[in-house]
Length: 476
Image: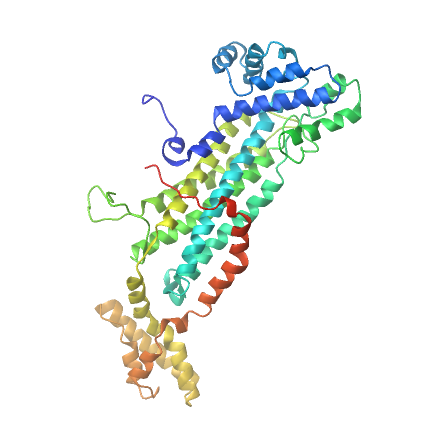
C-alpha cells in the first residue's frame, strides 16, 4: 500500500479505538443492526414477518460479505441497495423484508448519529482522563510560586498549580458543552422519502397509532431515548455542526495549553516529555524541541477550521434533502474526530510527563520580584509618614534606573539596593530582602487551587471514576 495516499490521521495520530468507530466494520454492522431493529419493530406492529426471518438476519449481522456488496455497487451505483442485496444473499428467507418501507437515510443517517455518539463518548473518556492528570499536576504544584505574565511581560506572581487550573477550567467548559450535546443526540428514526412516513402509512393500512410507535421502538432497540420529532429525508445537518463545534472547542483549549507549554519550555521552566533516544533537531544535536505540543497545535488548527465544513453544509441544504452533503460528511466528521482523538492522546501524554524546573522558575521570579514588591514597600513608607505620590514617583524613577541596568548593561536587578540607599524610604536592605518571600505575592493562588479541585474537579472525577486511569502513547 506504499504506492497510495494514506491519511496521517490513521497512520500517525488517531487511536485504534477511534479508528474502529469510523471503520467500515462499525458502519456496516450498524446498518445490519438497524435493519434487524426495523424488522423486529414491523413484526411487533403486525406485519407478516417471522421469527425465523429475524433469526436469520441476526445470524449474519456481523459476517459482512464485502466482496458481494462491492461487486453489486459497481453495477447499480448505490451503496445501500448493494448491501441490502449482499445481506439478502446470506439471508434468503429474510431477503424480501430487509429494508422494508425504508429509504437509504434510514441506515445512513441513523448510523451517522450512532457513530458520532460513540465518538463523543470516547472523546469524553479521554477528556476526563486529561482533566484527572492535569488536576494532579495542579495539586502537586499549587504552592510553587512562579512569575505570571500579562502581554507576556512579567506580572504579579502566581503559582504553577494555579496556572494549571486555567488550562483545566477550559477543559471543564468543553466537558459541559460535550455533555449537553451528547444528551441531545437523537436518531433520525424511520421517516421515509421526505420525512412524512407515507410509505409506512401504506404498509400499515393508514394506522397512525402504529406508525407513531415505530420511531420510539427503533430508538429503544438502538439504545437511544428518542428520535427527532420531525425531519425531511435526513436529520438536520445542524447536528453535525453542533458536534464539530464541540471538537473545535476542545482543540482550541488544547492549542492554548500547547502554546503555554512551548513558551515555558523556551523559558526552560517547564518541559514536555523528551525520550532518551529522541532527536530534537537534525542539525543542532543539543535541541529539545517541544514536538508533542507543536503537534497538538497543528492538529488543533485543522479541527478548528474543519468545524466550518458542517456549518456550510447545514446552511446550504435545500428543502427536504440534497446530496451535496454526502462527500463532505464522509471527510469532515470522521477526520475531525480522529484529529481530536490524537490531540487528547498527546495532551494526556504531555501532562503525564511534564518536567518542572523549580530552580529556574525561582531564579527568574526572584530577578523580577523587587519590582513586584514596590507597592508593599511604598505602602510601608506611607504608614511611616511618607507622601504617597512622592514615594510613587521616586519608586518609578528607581525602577527605571534598575531596569536600565538589567536590560542595557546585563547586570543584576539592584532595585532594593537603590531603595535602601534613598533616605526617603527609611528602610534597610535587610528589611527589604525580608519582604521577598514569593508566597507573600501570590495572593490566594494555593487556596484557589485547593478550592477549585475540591468543588469543581473532584465531583467530575467521582462521577467518571470507572473511566479513569488511561495512559497515552504517541505513535511517532
